[in-house]
Image (cartoon, rainbow, N blue to C red):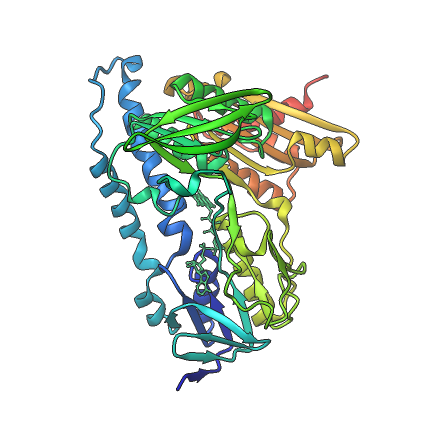
Length: 458
Ligand code: FAD
């Protein structure tokens, strides 16, 4: 006989979004049930942000050794032990894991159920041996790798982000299908760890970012030896010899083929809506995600959807932001409308690529009169000292000096975008940034220098 639980909140999915809702609600003494069918921590901890940044860090160390001669420090070509690289990835996950564990959440007072959750009607979820009738439900089931129906793909071995971080053998030649942030980060990490790497992208690599800024990153990656094929549609994949793989593609009328040893499919994400019983609960969705109103409620008022499954920007900090808004809505009846214009995002290639607000192209579409302010890294003393002179900051303002968006391509862009995210969320103007005092010498000075150009005679 299933036990019936009647908590205030039932959360389905213990990833970035679900854990934040559960922890916050529990801290207010609210009764919470949290359901997870896989690993606590979800994508970010186990198959996403954390392992990808860990392998990038390993690649960065190898790269630093290779370029150390420029600083008068001589070293031999680094020896890469892929098994040890994998141990490093695992140790990083293990260090963070306790924060997301069943033990921690149980200690916080959350009832954790390990099993798949499924709606059986508009106000009931079943999971394992439990029937849950909650006052509110939060769906935070995330997304999974989208694998396109490429002829031959099913017959070969390939990695996705769910299997790549289990690999303990250095790929001889890794072919990456997909030149988005995940594909490009993993391409550079493997390149620096000694693999040959080819990226095949159907449109434009890093195509969601400002092309001028993405261009800085692509040029650097190509300079390091990464092969990037753009406008290249993969037509089929085939096994080659005992352990190899061939990827056939077409660029315009030209057919081509790349032979490699390993394949990574990084062609986007599919939202996790299967098996949730959404129809039974009266919750509308499509292939892009669960339909949510501005306050993140679904078509069933009792149920919210947050994070990747809600179909918008797919980042850990967005899932966390949604979680905070939903908590405000459920516990305090405060308005909970996400403001996408203040959400930053970053790609952790080297150099990094980061953005908040509108890109130049978007600003030109929505505003009549804009100013584009720039400052290059090669004019920054710290960047020169560190040998990190590639890149620039690009700030878009309106005629009156309101900041519409900021993009940065260059060293530490992911860290540097923080102050711009704050500036935009607080509606600071370019004059505020021109007037603050950054410590010298820091790379963040490029922001102030760009802001000052606003006042230069045109
Ligand atoms: P998830 O964290 O995926 O959690 C969903 C959970 O729900 C999963 O644990 C799943 O098992 C569970 N679940 C699904 N269905 C059910 C069910 N029926 N019952 C019970 N449980 C269920 N974002 C960043 O901000 N920065 C980065 O650097 C970054 N790097 C990334 C690198 C890679 C390789 C990938 C793949 C993603 C990266 N992301 C990054 C994106 C980030 O991981 C996601 O946006 C984030 O994890 C989404 O959180 P979520 O709570 O929506 O879903």
